[in-house]
Structures are given as structure tokens and as C-alpha cells.
Image (cartoon, rainbow over all chains, first blue to last red):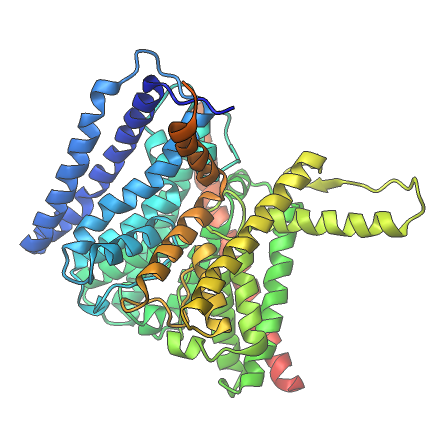
Length: 498
Length: 44
């Protein structure tokens, strides 16, 4: 039986949402200052407008501050699901007012693509977008990659924050408390920012000959998009714009860093190399190797790259970008559409599998792939071996673990849901008249939060398809649980008993 | 050296080691990619 939420429940949810929105208002100050320094007064006014609205919404939730700070699992998960719908709506305001989007829906599409670290874009004339707005697009990715709620958790305290943390598809606490884990995640990110921005700036300034300020903007936007596996580039030709192997190499390091779970980062920082024993590490290395071999064979067969160096460079970078869920490309969308046969299959599988759990990457995630494979192999073993044979369910993941029935069911369910998400998006694309291969590629790219495109995603695509991709990006990023919880909550509001 | 500064130093060294590890991983994967490309070109 469903019970209708009490008014106190709704107030608590509204209050928590208000607190999370403070983070968006604070983040908006960065492009605001940049626009002011650049004397771009139009952008200044749009960011002030967004910060004003967000600030008013945050402050208006203050009267609902609970006497006792309590937040149970159900409240937390609904807050997360709603936050990931509302934050892009507010983040879309400066985009919509930038005159580079055909409608607010287009701006919302890009903002959702940003916060979910997808990277699919419908912006028009990106190459002439104001620097402050470009930085805001990347900042949305950084905010989303870090976790909007997690960003707020760094400053929040009290009981119930675990629900918010887990609701955002993070199930790994590397330190005993959620708050200390959140701070560790920020520390890792800032250290990588220092390394990444400096290295990219040096390449832009010293190798590519950009002026110092332009180098900073490019380094900053690419870092935020690479480390948070987002994929928004400041130029329409993505990373192909730079034509630089060293630039691609540094970006590759940042993409790999973004696709590692923060548990792995913690282990590395503590000098523990046992991570190579982890099921998750071995799985991702195996799937990366497999998809790379398949893609290279396919690419060679297409005849697009006649020498092995070009084949290796393009094949490696695109597969790395797909598998880490980043979505940067060094080849144009039109050319990516020509990657047919095995090259197409390799790319789609790499995108669909994704990075490590509790990372900023999307997709099924390596730990689930590893456990699903183990469960599958064990089932076959059980069928082949004599009755009564003992089959080990043990595996190594930061220590010895056992795969219980509940864990296997949960892993299988999420994996099947991802496959279903990819298929639904592909069917929608086919229904709108796109070829099967292109529709599947774009659907997996949206659902796994990758951002590579074969050309379907642009401002002129059907409105309904934009909504479908938005829903895919949202559900894929939250790994379904929060989405179902929100559905249940809405149902209990409508049909529940008092 | 206090416990706090020792811990911070340990963290700083760990952070550098972590980034070096990531660089090594990318170099290894990149080399593997080139070897695969060479092999594929040779086979086909």
C-alpha cells in the first residue's frame, strides 16, 4: 500500500533542494567574473540573472528548515533525482540567453548533457560562443562529474547524507564518513586540475602558439571536460582542432584519471598497488583491449586510414574516449559515421560498458561487467560439472569478496536496464528515420553519458528525440535507482493514502 | 615533523605517484594500440 507523503516530507525535500542550489549560484560566479573581466556585459547580465533566480529559490527554502536535521533514504533519493532535473534547468538560463541556442529546450539539452557529463551538444556556432559561456558549459560538466549533491555535501553535515551520496550513483566510501570522502574527491580533482591545466596551458602557449589568456581558457575548459569525462570542447571540431599528439596524450591521461574510481585514486595515493588484482581493474583492461582490437580490425577494413600510425592514433584515442565515457573526438562526426562494421561494433560496445564504478564515467561500469561475466561463467560451470561440485563465488576487489545472490541480482538488473535504455533510444532514432547503426550509436552515447556523435544530435533534430536523449542522459547518470524512486514518490503523491 | 605534516607529505608523494601511475597506464595502452594497429595492417 502506498502512503501519501506528509507535508513535513515535502518541506524537507524542498529545503534540501534549496541548499543544493546554493552550489549552482556559487559556481555561476566564476563565469560572471570572467565575463566582467572580458567586458562582455551581455554575459554578465545573463549570469547575474541566473544567480539571482537560483539565489531566490535557495533562500525561499529557508522557512522550511526542519527543527531536527533528519533525512532518510527515501527523502535523499528523491532530492537527488529532482536536483538532477532542476540544476540543468537553472544552468540552461545563461545558455538560452547567449543567442546560440534555438530554444530553451536546446539550452536545457546542453545543460543536461553537461551535468550528466555526456557531451552531446546542440549549440549553434560554438566557435563564436562567448568565453564565459564556454567556461560555464565546462563548469556544468565539472559540477556534474564531481556530483552536484556531493559538492553540496562537502559543506553539509548531519544525518542522512549517505542517502544523498548513494543516490548519486556512488556506492563507495573511501573514507569512514561521507563528508571526508567528499573532501577527498575534491582534493583529487584539484590536484589533477593543477597538473592538467598547467600541462595543457603549456602546450597551448608553447607548442600551439596561442596567447596566454586564450591558452588558459582552452586548458581550463578541456581539463574540466576531460577529468570529469564530459567531452564538451570549446571548438566545434573537438580535439581535432589542436592537431597535436602531445595535447591528445595529456588529455588521455586526464580521461583515464576521470574513469578511475575514487577508491582506486585513494589506493594509489596510499601507495597500494594491489588495485591491479581487483576484478574491476582486470575487467576494464580486458574490455579496453578487446574493443580496441575489434575496432582497429574494423577500421583497417574500411580503408579510411592507410598507414598504421594514423590507424593507431585515431583508433586508440577514439576507443579511449568512448570507453572512459568522455566523448572527445579527433575525427569529425561525419567521418565517425563512416566507421562501419567491426569499427562501429567496437565503439558501441566500448561506450556501453563505460568506466569504473564510483567514477565520473557512465555506462554499465567495469565492476558490473566483471561480476556479470563471473556469474555467467559460474552458471555454465554449474551446468557442466557433476552435481554437488563446489563453485567459487569469491573475487578480489580491494580485498577478498564473495558474490552473494542479492549482489548478482542487483548487478544483473542494472546491466539489463542499461541495455534496455540503449535499445529504447535506438528504436526511437529508427522511428524518426535514422539508419539503425546511427540510431544505436547515438542512443548508447546518450545513455552511457559518452557524447560521441555520428551526426544525429544537432539543433535540427526532432524535438521528441531531444526529450528522449535528455531522459536517457538523466537515467543513465543516476543509474536508475533514483529515477524509480522519484517515480514511486510521484505515484504516492497522486494515489497514496493519507 | 608533526603527525599532520607527515601525513600531508605522505599524501603529496602519493598524489605525484598516482599521476605518474596514470601516465604509465596511458603510455602502456597507447603502445599496445600502436602494436595492434601495426599487427592489423600487416595481417590485412
